[in-house]
Length: 572
Image 1 (cartoon, rainbow, N blue to C red):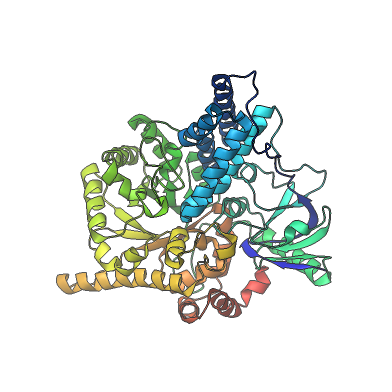
Image 2 (cartoon, rainbow, N blue to C red):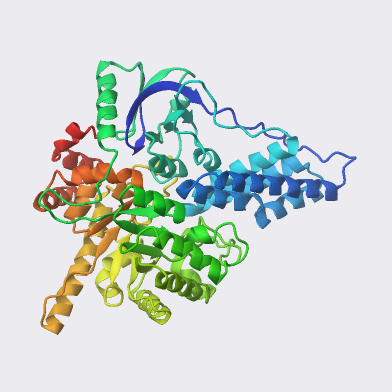
């Protein structure tokens, strides 16, 4: 019997046979030269044609999926024809290198550069490697390695998974994902959570598992073991029973003592919004407006934006829809807006900051949001990503006022915003914590590196302290306003829209820290609701204090789990 311990990123317990991803495409021989009979211009044209074909294939896949998977595929498709990648390959072709070897070397160089930058850009390194392999396969006239097919369901094991594969896998065939690399915020992890698939990443050594070997996977604890025993089979049975009971959310998020905790959904377009409404989400806590921009070489028209946003608003008449303005830059480059030559884009001009380098795009987007809001019955709130100072919050609020949007807010993703939230709340009406970025920036840990997965964990007490500081800032600002107005003023709302809100156990801590709403993938709503209904607000506060005072993320998690006996009954 062998045990492997990685990072559990999507809960669930299953037993099944292992199937490995096929071997990667063979590397073109180093030093492979352009055939003497082929002119460099002809080879360069063939390369560009192959790149365009790969882009079209990825966009076609994107058209068959929705939500997170679609966003990932659209972003990856753009990389296939990235001007810098193609230019580097063509330069090698002109120097006498074969087209296959040229794109391979250009892709490897680009991926190495991204890995060196760390942060968001390191996340894109695997995407570049996948794209260059697909272009080589296209040039060779052979299919790129795909997820294996099998007559029976299986557990997919890989070093890591390309976004194009993860986004389109069939949950009826692939019952769990296990990777040796990656981290809790990798594309594999995010898509696995969206699909409701048990998943473990950063499980060193799993590549040595025999194909067909029967293994047990626990997506909550990160344990993968061979030769499942009776206890593990019983754990799977309990999960299957509880999973069916935790499949429906009744649309009423609250704690055991009746404390209201609205449970909202993260969406990326109208289809996502309709799915979230069908899952009884109490509104939208994060509308990623990038869906309207990705895949475009030019800024979408006002009419196109209005139609796209209205499709989301119409799914939630009378309910809150929180719109995040364009979060371009870093892992979401846009040809008409971002500078791909930045030395460290994760710390560069991204999110709200693009309005300083390319003024006008944000104002036009806010005008489109306002027009769409005027044509719907949704309660539209608008927030800007990557806000770091009170001055930025003030400027954004002024832009919203000019557009006729009455409820401006900010994303708290940068530690400075958390630590000075009282001053930000002087200018905006709400905040939403993006815990994915907040964790990465607080811990200085690339969220894609498996070796740093333990650091890149929202259970880190330092991250919880920043959340606590953000909520305290809202309360402090309210007391300050009350003293001036001689009347009670309620703290302004502080929600969470990062992946941590989908963790039912961490949701209790967030409630105890004073967060006023939680937004997540619709699949997480039933489990989060079920656990919240087992605790009162005072109990949640006590558990939250234990977590903040813990010396490590692991101990914080264990302390809180120990205080939630209902988890065992719920199979969580």
